[in-house]
Length: 74
Image (cartoon, rainbow, N blue to C red; front, side, top):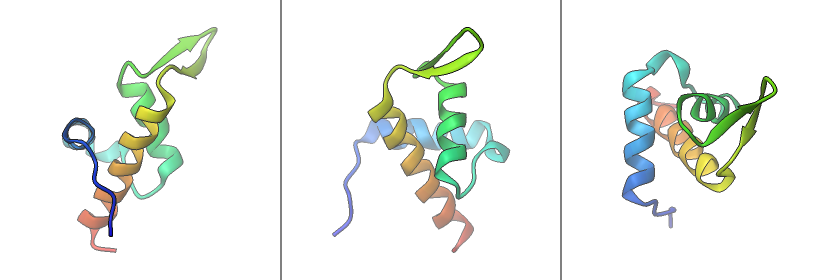
């Protein structure tokens, strides 16, 4: 059985990928950084990116990673 994700997580991830396709790939850590940069889930404090909503950012980045791997065909 697979995981069922809420529609808003899927929608945000797909929209981010649609607007910034070169920023996302098959690496979760890189995708998480990009999600934090491109959304308001992370804030810059003294030049350092701090996570405000960690669980939501992880879920969006995880779905984006899975989506990109499936889209790529590997």
